[in-house]
Amino acid sequence: MGTLGWIIAFSVLGGVLSAAAGGVFLLFGDERRTSLLPHLISLATGSLLGAAFLGLLPEALESVARDGVQWVTLSVLAGLVFFFLLEKMVIWRHCHEEHCEGHTDNPGADTRVAVGTLILVGDAIHNFIDGVLIAAAFLSDVRLGVVTSLAIAAHEIPQEVGDLAILLHSGYSRRRAFTYNVAVSFTTVAGALCAFVGLSQLEAALPYVLAVAASSFIYIAVADLIPGLHARTELRDSVHQVSLMVLGIGLVYGLDHALH
Image (cartoon, helix red, strand yellow):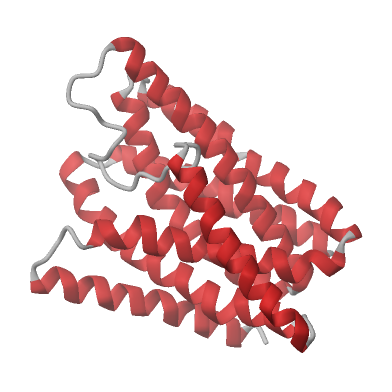
C-alpha cells in the first residue's frame, strides 16, 4: 500500500472510527460511562506524551542539520502558544467529562443550541488538524504515522464521549448527536488529503510540522487531560492513573520498536 493509502486508512481510524467508537458509550449507563472515562483519559495521556517525546520530536530533530535544531524547538514553543490561543478563543475546546464548561446548570434554548453548534465547529477544526498531523507523520515514516494515528485515536475516543454528552445536553437526540459527530469526523480525512498534497511539495517544512504535531500532543496531555485527572485524589485512583499513563507510554514504545 502506498503512502496515500496509509494516510487515508489511518485518518479514517483516527477520526471516523474513533467517533463511532465514542458513540458506543451512548449505550452505557451514566454511572458506567462516568467510571470508564478517567481510565481512557489516563491511557490517552500516556499515549500522547509517548508519541510526542518518543516518536515525533526525535524524528523532527533527526531530519534537520544541527543548525536547524533551534528552529525545531521554536516550532514546538510556537505550537504550544498557537494551541493555547485556539482554545482561548473556544475554537478548540476539549471536553472529556460528563460535566464540564460546556454544561451550564440552567441554559436557555438558544444558549444550548449555540453550544452544540460551537462544539461541532470546533470538533471539525480539531479533526482537520488531526488529519494534517497524521499525513505529516506518514510522509516522514510509516512507522511514525502508525504510532501518531493510534495516539490520536486513543485521545479522540474519550473526547468524542465528552462531545456527545454536550450535544445531548444541548437538546440533540441520541441519533442526531451520533450522526452529526461522525459526519464532522470526516474532516480528519480532508485535513490528511490537504496535507498530503501540500507537504509532498514542501518536504523541507516536514520536520517543523512534526514539531508542531508534538506540541499539539503535549498541550492536549498537559493542559487538557492531566488537570482533569487531578480532580481524583484518592491513592487508589492515583495508582490507576499513573499505571495507565505508563501503559500508554509503553504501548507507544513497544509499537515503535516492533515496527522497526
